[in-house]
Structures are given as C-alpha cells and as structure tokens.
Image 1 (tube, helix red, strand yellow):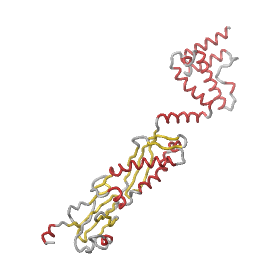
Image 2 (image 1 turned 90 degrees about the vertical axis):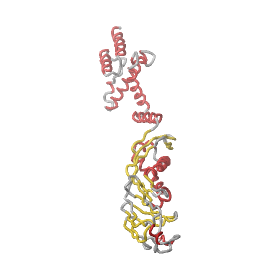
Image 3 (image 1 turned 45 degrees about the vertical axis):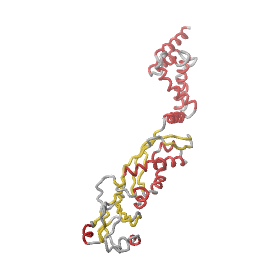
Image 4 (image 1 turned 120 degrees about the vertical axis):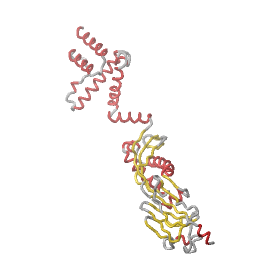
Length: 342
C-alpha cells in the first residue's frame, strides 16, 4: 500500500452507541469504508451488548465495559479468515450494538377474535387485550433470527412479528389447559399465568426474554355472552323452579309497558292474573324460606278463603310497588267486590 493510499484511509479509534433514537433495539455502526484502528477502544454501556460480525459470521459478543481491541480481547477473531496478521494493521468488521433494556408497557390485543377449545363450550371465540414487557436476552440469537444485517431494527419491527406469536401461543395454551374457560375469564391473572410460561419459551427461540405479561380484559361474542348470562341466572336461582320464578319476575316489568298491562301477555285478564298470582306466590315462598318457614302463612298470593279487605290491601301494595298496572288493580278490585256482594 502506497503512503498516499494509507493517508486517505479513515480509521475508527472509538466505537460506541449513545442510543439517541427511542425505540431502536439494534444498530449497526456506520463503517462506510472505514477500518477499525488496531488498539482502538470499544465502549459498551450498561444495558448494551456489542457483536462483531466478520463475513457474515458472529465472531465475538461484548457485554458492558470498555475494551481495547487487540488479540487478547478478540481471541475468536484470530481464527477466522483474514485474521492472521495479529492486528499489525487496521482491520474491518461489522459491529452491531443491541439494547438490552426492558421494553415496558407494550400493548397486545386480538384484532380479530381467536378460537380456543374449551371443555364446557367446545369452541370459543374471544377477544383479549393487555400489556407485556420484554428485552433482548441473547444478542447473538436475536441477530441471527430477527434483526440480521439491517442498519437498525426497532421495537415496531420486532413487535410486528411478536403479535402473531402471542396470539398463537395464547390459543394453544388455553386450549391445552385443563382449566375451563369460565374460570380463566373470571380470573385474568390465572389466564395470564397460563399463557406466560408458554410465551416465554416461544420468545426465547428468538433471543428475547419475557419480563411481564398480563391480560387486561376479555370479551366474548354476543351469543356466548347470552348463554353465560342464562347459566349465571340459573346458578343464582339454584333450581328450575327458582329459575322459572326469576324469568317471571323479569317478564312482569316488560308486560306492564304493554297496552292492557300484565293481562296483555296472554289471553286477557285470566292470563294476567295467573302471572300475578305466580309472582305473588314466588315472593311468599322466598320470604318463608328466608325465615325458616316461620311466616309461610303470610304469602302475598291470593287464597280462596282470604278476607276481601286483606285481598284489596295486598293488591294495593302490588300497585304501589309498580308490580301490577292500574288496569290490573281495577279489574281485580271489581272481582273482589263482586264476590263480596254476591
């Protein structure tokens, strides 16, 4: 090499990365024809890793610290092609810096419902959202599997690939779990715990470490939510009779909004009175059960030998509570008076 050619060469004395751009996980030091000066300095800050790559092959990985680049600090490189001069002249290699800081508060979610297998419901479609955090745990593996030779590799780049991994892992984890979906949906911490272990193993294949993973919300399709609401109602009722009473109580306020009040539900006044009696009997049974049967005789339902005054008083109480309409009250009152006067 002539003296003029040597003078024109540019040499790098210090290699370092200040991480001045937010969200960058991997950054290639800009060589642009320059060569690393023999005895140059490599500065790797805390939460960084530097990787030397020669002719496409990872040669050495450096953790935090300051290194003088000699045969003592780069022993592996001396065994690679074109590294037999013991650094008596400048050398050239690609140098990549990686940020190992934890990337916190990253959002994940299901843009489309995912389908999982459940022991109770068979196939279940759900949407879920939450947060997770991760970091680069193995820079060499991350370089070979994800970032490659790009000038820089950002969070957006890696999270685009992680999105599919998270959803696939969630579907497999919940589907293979022996815990039924209802228990998981009611306990989002349990769901997150079930997924986190499998997801950590999946990310480790790409040199990433999973720090945290949580499920913030779970939503179901309307048809499944309706089925769950009925199951919950039946569970609260305890048996079929109570569930029927629950359904009747739900129907009465709706019927009162129709023309003719409760009597408009079925075939006129007779059907309306039957529903009213069913409701009254249900209320009476509930009161009796709550008091150990001590007030069984105080049921609100009408009986054949009930005194007209008591009957009218109870009807008025139902009217005041909005459980029957004015039309129903007037009709029932006329019936009581008719029986009274013969």
